[in-house]
Image (cartoon, rainbow, N blue to C red):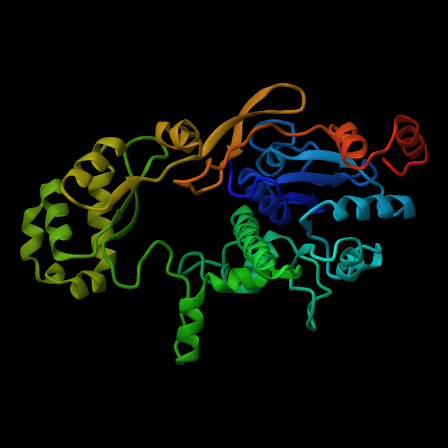
Length: 398
């Protein structure tokens, strides 16, 4: 049995950050019911040219494993049905702008009236309170506003726009907070409203810069450099678009690197005879390592460096990750079936394994819009066929 087996999530989330949160929870065993509407499709369900195909590739990453129903939340009966679903759920998750759920009649107090111990999880740009709570936002804004983008990039270049890595970081933080709230409910019997602010997640990832700022220091962009390790960076090999990552932090690693490169005379060079000296001369070192890597095959260079005890690896592409036997063995990368039945290597498994329970897994592929309405509206909510058809005709289920 999986860790969250027996729990149910009413999933109102859209786009990426919120859906990735519930996607992780579904892999841990929770039954996740995605509430959608044909009137306003989740932007990730819409076809768009990405990853070399016209289908909604990103949707596979956050919707596989879920059940799908349609509900018109602008219709009073749609709101009533949503409350009925929440009443038989453990978690209600949403990722709208602050205040949207309350205006729909589905705010925390309204959901508590339907299920007193409900755990409601709200994921937004700036949180549910405070002077900036009204701002909407997407991944690039989270990273920019939280300071992560400012610290990412080269010394002579602009800040880097952070995209899906920001959404997924927010989603993982929200999933952790949800599990904590469920643990509290198990101990106390009390539900709670979990408020996750995406920009605060970004700021939590630059804590060393915040600490430095508090001490009167300013950290800036350093590209692939490190604050004390050298040589440290990515170096192009002779293979097309294959880069070698090397990180040297000790004299032993430096000496091993010179042996692999066939340049042991560098050990006696006063410019490189200590960690501090090597860091001071890091630009010269980068040129030396880059020149050596340029004449090497990436895989062969990395194998030689690792065998010698030098931290090194090929900078992997998405294709490398998808095809990796180790990740396949662990279930970190799995094949999922799209709604049309096609099989794609698209889904990312939850990054944890458990010794005393079943491991996270993806049991089903991307759901079709409204694919599971007979189960949810019929078996769970008890609507008969006539009621269901009437609600469809009245655009309540739409």
